[in-house]
Image 1 (tube, rainbow, N blue to C red):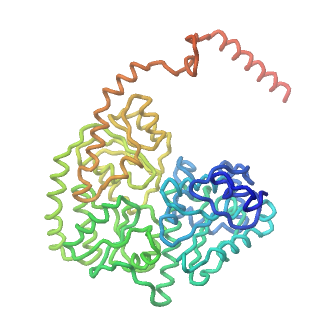
Image 2 (cartoon, rainbow, N blue to C red; image 1 turned 45 degrees about the vertical axis):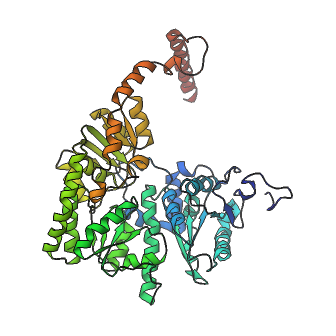
Image 3 (cartoon, rainbow, N blue to C red; image 1 turned 90 degrees about the vertical axis):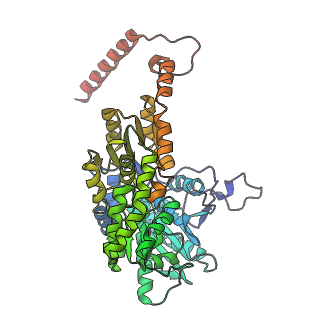
Amino acid sequence: MRPEGPPNPPRHGEGNRPQAGGGGLRRIDTLDIGLPAPTTAGACSSADTLRAAAVQAGKGDVLARYATDYPQGPHDQPQSMCPAFGSLRVGLRMRRTATILSGSACCVYGLTFTSHFYGARRSVGYVPFSSETLVTGKLFEDIRDAVHELADPALHDAIIVTNLCVPTASGVPLQLLPDQIDGVRIVGIDVPGFGIPTHAEAKDVLAGAMLSYARREVAQGPVAAPRERSDRPTVTLLGEMFPADPVGIGLMLEPLGLAAGPVVPTREWRELYQALDCAAVAAIHPFYTASVREFEAAGRTVVGSAPVGVDGTAAWLDAIGAACGIAQARVDGAKNRFLPAIRGALAARPISGRITVSGYEGSELLVARLLVESGAEVPYVGTACPRTIWSDPDRDWLEARGTRVQYRASLEQDLAAVAEYRPDLAIGTTPVVQAAKQAAIPALYFTNLISARPLMGPAGAGSLATVVNAALGNQARFDRMSAFFAGVGEGPTAGIWQDTPVDRPDFKAKFAARRIAAAKAEESVGT
């Protein structure tokens, strides 16, 4: 193992690379490059083996809870990035919060992409391991030492320790870590790819764990007050959203005598107390099952759907009013104030065309509702997230208007929908967008181009129209490009060449016959 602090100055990022083997805390900078070979291979492709090992190692209760909270669909798992991408993002967005990962070196290094992709500008702690430290339990001791090393109350309110696949399968007992060290809270979670279907739900794993910790603190006595506190009852907003949306929701709550509370996952630990101290919880993203459990344990009512479009806003204000005991006259006053503005914004920016929607963020049904109210035909919406009671209002509304809603949608289902409905625009994940454009269908990436816009209230009404209508208007360009490049880069013309390649079907048939003969000969020897 290369010694720390080599005599000669390291190349950019070299001195911080995670090391194979056990012992010690490593810091992975956001621009670190290069990595030795991983200590454990095949983690992402051996889910059944790892799951069985985790149960045998004492993690059966954790996996059972995950199976209940995040039920899988008819297929094993939606095609998504590593689930720990989500929980790591939540921790990196929080102030005065340190993050430690325990897992295979290749996994940890890949996950540091999150930190510089989202501009976290902070290091990710990493506790490496070897087969010996993993089997003997020394890895847990190394993690405990790393936690003690980082637990500086002048710098941190909390330290998040995350087991990835291999430490989870090996039963590394993060629950045995101290709850706090010198006032710094220690939160340990397991985020295995074989137990949590999507990165979106891994956000809930960490958010729920922190809410549980904060709820226990509140039960024990006074806690730190939030930096800003409303003089009105608040509605906590559950699920990440565009920054302008909480502001817009607050404006719609004002006539009800309410205010928008923190957004969970929060940006600071003390906001967790404020989130728990609410009049109701709005499950904007409906898959935060563990977080809902904590809010319900605190006696809070959870309301589904969101103030999206005319119908969605009217129903949501009614539901919030009922949950908070607001007189119907005040609720009607709020609707009379905001619904005409929403209706006018939608009418001013209509959308005409057939659009399919798919993604893995959790807001896909809300986007589909807004598109339908804008005038679009939406025959299909697929989400990698599961069906919950908090998304039922959106599902019922969409299905009543002819939209097929697919929970736990696989890539194959999303692609089949594009092929079946041949939309004027496909909104989806990267591979869906790629496939649509190859078929000369305009397409937009959901996460970067759709999620990065307001959806709620008057500000959200019509917000999608500009980008959607611009994409719908590109069909003629796609047709021209398809005609110009037809046949280029396909079949025998793929690759780089000087003379135009000529297809030789006779060669293909000759070598196909040889392969068949060789396979038969091999089968004969085997018997």
